[in-house]
Image 1 (spheres, one colour):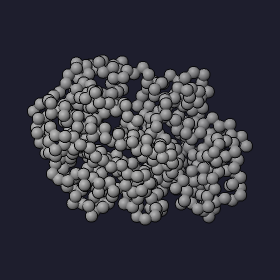
Image 2: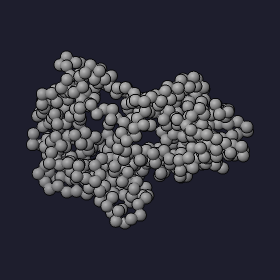
Image 3: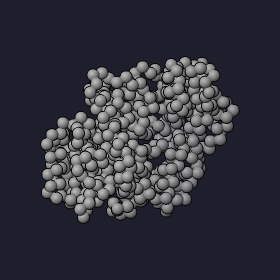
Image 4: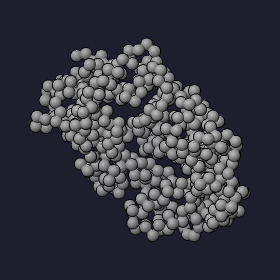
Length: 492
């Protein structure tokens, strides 16, 4: 059985998004952007959800082995298992007209076959249409008659209590009728993709909204190399359609944006700041903000992880579960700065030990500063709902939260060096250039999530201590950055 395939499901989906990406993926893979470390977590999550979904279909047999890339053997094994009468196949491989697809789950019940595509999302998204349609097309052409084809995705409303209830955790949504309707277009898209792959030169396709819709392309570094660092695409709060309008008119650099181009207030502040070095320092409002703060003053930052599969009672898919906090404290504006915090052990529910420690560390009175208050408020609200016995104290902490981001978000304080952003990563170097995240082993939240995951699988005691130290320093730096930013506002 030949499997001289030209397209796989993955490369077909790439072709739907951009034929240039398809061509580069086949013939110029060395031009691919360096892998994003956060993608490793995405792939791992997808695999975990796929494996869990298989438990809904006991007795299933894996047709495509993951330990080697051998499509010919996968297809042969799939057909052999079907002939043997195996009722449930996992990773079933089919090839038709040089197009290879791997079906997550193929089930036979009472002579009828059903296919399932497993997704780690909590809803059915538009890109899944093509995902299912290409699989349906190949199955149909290879003689597999389907009674149904469904997406299995996670139920965002599921709350774990005790053992996982997979029948509630997963939701099935039939896509069969849509797949049938799309089949003529699938055939057309396959022909188009093959034609582009048979060309001798890279397709002349300019950048466009499709570069990151529905997924960020891994050749953007190559295709976007002509776009300057500070371009129309970096202008804050400008609609994508307007960015490409300027780009196609040859106005790519922020400096090129015409004076009469309509801009909202946020975009205008960014553009004028960049073009003319204009700052905004509203001393009256900043004074009122600083003067309103009630001491002792606490500076709080949480680190969280959000597993797709709820790990503890009272959690949902992708619940933000806090595993660490950092807390700086000042009794007066000129008082001594102290620091404490909490970092949970991996592999256990961190929430009660963390909240008990937080409550001890933040007795009333005094405001609790956060940078992006809604995030910390959401964590405290979730903890209150999960552990109502702590509700009065947690609600007190929530009522004392004050958002340090507000003066920058509202543009009461804006410097051109912030490049249109009010994130702490943009505000800190603009106001306090002597402090930098660059020297840290962990420098942003997704890295912290990944580090906490690594704590759960790492066995080397030395490496465990290194990771815990890196996490501690990163979270501590976040609240120290808040301290220094407020001090800078005070000097204004």
